Length: 172
Image 1 (cartoon, rainbow, N blue to C red):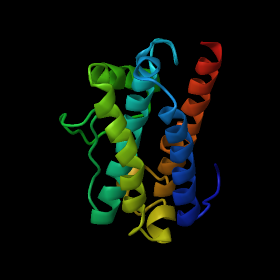
Image 2: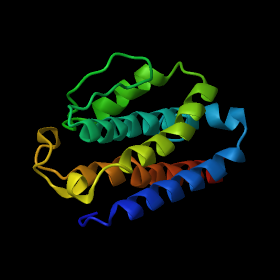
Image 3: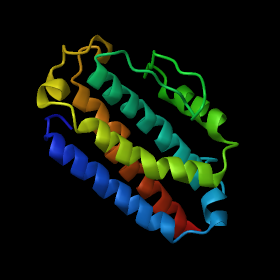
């Protein structure tokens, strides 16, 4: 995505992708959600924990922007926070996310998944278009406008993995 579509459209897209994945998840059994092989060795639970970790990053950025602070991140709930998030090696980061979340229960991962999109929408609400589009407003965005972090780590990411899950279900 190369152009800012507006805060309302960002919010709508988050809600639509979240609802689509929620609708699919409602039809699945616990066994389906915990069986490996959806994305590499990951189960649907692992995919959701992966989405959660990246969405937690977006939420941290949005909440920090509202407070004019530096964002803090964690790979799993109740884990230590860190302030540097580098996309230099996404595969390593994704493996680290998996390692931090693989022992979480399905219910715990689902509960977090169901609340994060709402929390992100809530965090977007107080931000102005200037907050979201001014690439120089927050030093920690490294010259990127804040809005650019939203699609790739929320609705585009959810849509990508919804397609992975649908493909896997079609094969199983």
